Every structure is written in C-alpha cells, then in structure tokens.
Length: 112
Length: 113
Image (cartoon, rainbow over all chains, first blue to last red; front, side, top):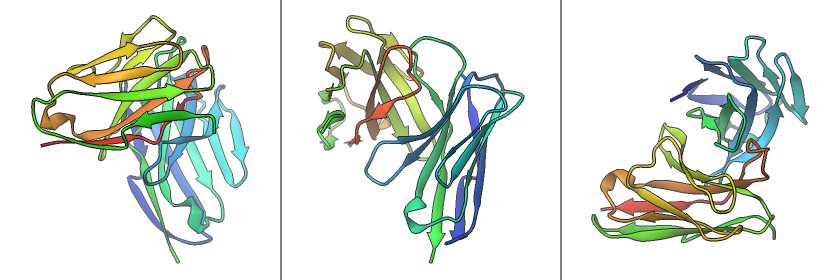
C-alpha cells in the first residue's frame, strides 16, 4: 500500500520557537491533510490542502501542498505549551470514500 | 454534543475471546471508518463503509469483521482475539464525498493477553 514518510519523529523545542515538519510520498496525492492528536483523544483536523502549491494557514499554523504533489509541509510559529501533541500528515490519491493514508506522526514536546 | 461516540473506552481480553467495539455518530454522515493505531505506526485503516449497506476492506482487515447496522452505527468485531490485535482503535465518520474531513472518536484501548 501507499506509505508516507513523516519527519522528524519527535521534536524537543523551547516555548516560542518555530517548528517545521514534513511528509513525503513515493506516489502522487491529490489531497494532503494535517491532524493533531492529544493524549487520550482522536486526531483532529488542522488544515486540508487540495491543490499543488497551495499554502494555507490556520492561526499560527501554515501548511503547504508541494509542487510535485508528493510532499507537504507544516510550520508552527511561536510555539506555545498547548501545541504539544502528535502531528500526523495524511493524504489520499483517489476519489471515493476509501479513507486516508497516514504518516507515522511527529511528536512535539515543548520545554518551558 | 454532536460527534463520534465509541464504547468501551478500555478493554482487556484473553487470547481467543471475542468482542465487539461499538461506534455511533449523530452528524448524519454517510461514511464511517475503523482505524487502528500502534506505537510508531500511525493510523491504519481496517474497514470502511462508504454508505449504509456497504462495507469494504482497508489496509489491515485480517482478524476483523464489521457491520454497518444503520446510518448511525458501525461496529467492529474481533472473533478470536490475538495479542497482535492489542492496539488503540479509532472510529471516524465523514460526509459522503469528503472523506478527507474525518471526524474521529476518542478511541478504544484494547489489550489482548
């Protein structure tokens, strides 16, 4: 099946720092999404991207759909303690309702 | 509150036992999904139901069965649990045609001893 390579696996940063993470695929996707998961909860959608080159923001979060359609990036500016969690990229390559392919996640830890 | 409700929250089984995980959504969504989450593995699709009356296999369907009981409810059954099925299970739903906008439940943590 399709695989997404997400990096880094984990990040230890100081409050106030900017964060960057990315996701790559060996195949083309026509939709890229970024989810955040907090302990004991299911993932929550942060940003959805539908066009190559698209750049979309949600508050301090900005995500981009790569030009090649094989990658996506998520940036968080001026991190705060509530940004802690696991961030997942996800994508799909076709139409229909067959769900998403998820990356393995980036665990964000913020040190005071 | 509207959303996806999963029961139970936690479950411990012995190898060979059976159980059914329940999921219900009250948003009138057409499509429903079951994922499992293992450490370092992300989320993997077990089964999905694009609409009431249909079910299809996902990436890791072996050892599981599903039932789309009605538009609201989608259950996941383990007939003979194995230690490899120890995982966190998430149910999700979406409107038809927008499967990327999945709304997840809070998960069921299952341990098989």
